[in-house]
Length: 87
View 1 (cartoon, one colour):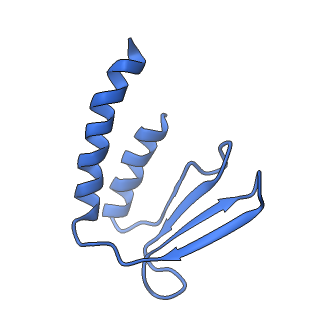
View 2: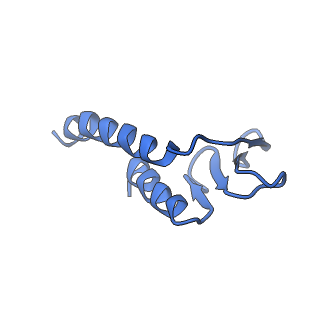
View 3: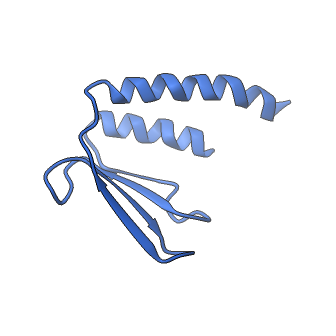
């Protein structure tokens, strides 16, 4: 599964109310989105265990429409890049 397909799956799971891991344990940083983080708000956690051994935790409050917005942007990226990569 490509990283873009993985992000589409992550958006579906987030929309269903689940926490997600994206690019977990691939070469490079892993990204985790927790809907209820340490400060009782959503947060993004980036862990780079294979390289710098650094973890960054960012609490945030996304706008109400962020998942549909990300789906639209992902669709635009995939429509542009997937045909180029397939050919």
